[in-house]
Image (cartoon, rainbow, N blue to C red; front, top):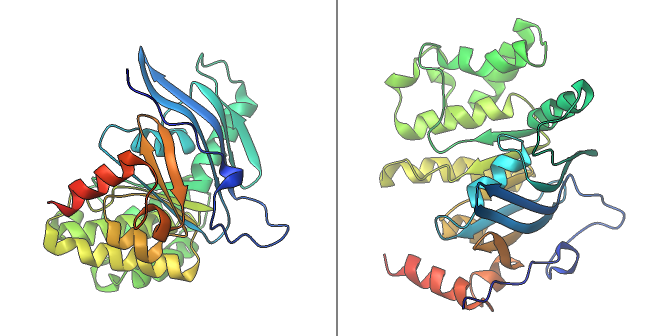
Amino acid sequence: MTTRPAPIDPYAIPGRLVPPGAAPIVRVDRLEKYFGDNHVLRGCSLEVYPRETICVVGRSGSGKSTLLRCINFLEEPTVGSIEVDGLRVEADPLGRRGRQHREQVRQISIRASMVFQEFNLFPHLKVIDNLIEAPIHVLGMRRAEAVERAERNLAKVGLTEKRDEYPDRLSGGQRQRVAIARALSMEPKVLLFDEPTSALDPELVGEVLKVMETLAHEGTTMIVVTHEMAFAREAADRVYYMEDGSFAEAGPPEQVLDAPRNPGTRQFLARLLAR
């Protein structure tokens, strides 16, 4: 019989450098998620403070991507609550939300922007139009203001000269950098990255990780699901190891990645090093 890891207490994680009186910008409380009989998330609790980068690592199928999708309500949690920037929303698996609660979910999704594995750019829109679409139609920004913001973010990811290109004329790494700039253009409270380099050729991974490291060092609040351990070691304030739907280990990178206490973490890292 397999022994499941005990859920991690987010209040007892070593290595957190939290300013006195600081409040978390993201709080995930006892999250559960079922897909039919498949119990994917099992009591996950997580706190993220402003300017922190949190990396979530673990084997494929451990629940990492589902966790991110629940945080911005691309998936509806079965049990638990999500709080982003002071706005707390309880799980509603039966779909009984009224108009006010639906608006709260919409606000959560605006405050927690997702960068996907597969870019999800609109192929029929130029790069600049991909970036201004949501600020205009979701945030109600004037076009000129949205364009100015988009151009700043394209400069941040090193793609100013690609503003008028279509996505199919870009490399995979360039498309992912456009996707990051698009997420930044919503000025979210937290960026969610779902294995952002997994769909890239190896030679293109570095250009995306470099942008993400810069964002981390600038103090952008991020939750990153990744298998890039060098990035986690360099950029993360804390690393969470996920096993069978629960956080089995959490702490600063030097603890989780260099001296893990959990046997599953050690096995996972050994498999990555053996590739």
